[in-house]
Image (cartoon, rainbow, N blue to C red):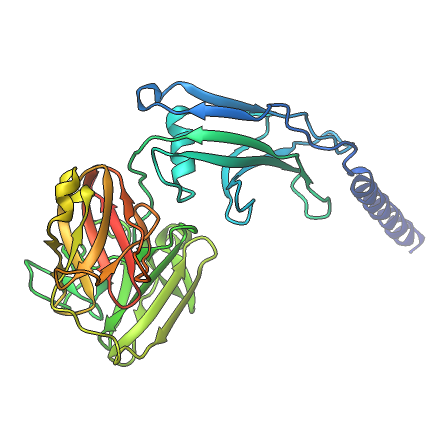
Amino acid sequence: MKKIIFLLVTAIFFIGLQSCEDDNDKIIAEPNAALQIKTPNSELVLQKSDVDTTAITLEWEPSDYGVATQIDYVIEMGVAATGFETSRVVGQTNETSFSWTVKELNSEILKLGLEPNAQSDLEIRVSSSIGTTQVEKLVSNTVIFTVTTYGEVILLRDLFLVGNAVDTNKDGIANNDDWSNNATNTYLFRDAENTNTYYFSGYFDANEFKLLESKGNWQPQWGLDGGSFTSSDILGGDPGPFVTSAAGYYSLQVNTEDLTYTLDPIDASAAPMYTTIGYIGTARTGDDTGWNEDADLVQSSFNPHIWYANDVVLFDGVMKFRHSNDWPGNWGGTTALSGTTTTAGDPPAIPVIAGTYDIWFNDLDGRYILIPKS
């Protein structure tokens, strides 16, 4: 009996000793020095002919947490006029420097929604952490990069609808009787600032649907699992479908990073019905003659507020959407590839980078998206 008690006391002693050691680790893991970027403010002009050369290398003093452990560094970039409210993570490393090629830096800047072929002031900062929420991360000073970008097509995740609650358009004929994943499936509209957020407002039948990323492919596939938004990549298998219990107009919003979604009925009875909507501008022809007339979009026969055109060749320039082939009934925006339009006053024209696209426009909420074909 004494031997058993002795063994228990010994075990408790060593558990307590280990706990003390863990506590000591937590106590001494405190930052001892500020995180400082060494690279000075810079001015850069990015050239498309130099895509594979190094644009800039950011360097900083190593963080000191008082313990020998791996330190993780995250680099953020934001527009100087707005600070880091709409910043993006543009690099992660365990080293004390990070480099971008011209192509990489140009792409990261355009993903902030900035206009190509223009000069922009950007803020960059670095934060460090050691993999535990019990130790406060360090945040560096801010440096300013004044950068002139060039135009290029940025490939981002696109999501489209599939299922028997939505339109699967085959050869110009509305069809929601099957789950075809390689027809004229309707796309969701990606947020211009948060590229993980997507919207769709439109008509749904009382049935089921899912979201796909690549025409003709069932993976990756997005849907529900136990009522939560998820994907086949996360689950390791196919998620279940969204379900609309009654036919009507709904507003769908999903976020592929936070894994959140909303699907709510909306009243679209007061929305105007248009007979024609087209796109117009220099991006249509490559010169000012593009403002002379519209190129008409196709109206979905299943979802009459959705308009589209496939395999459209566009030029470097700008464009607007216009109804009834006349002014002033036009929509304009400020961000390339996707965004929300306005009709107030004389709306701005949407910047376009030359390429071949599928064009989608929703007159219910004024959202648009250009899907690059390569």
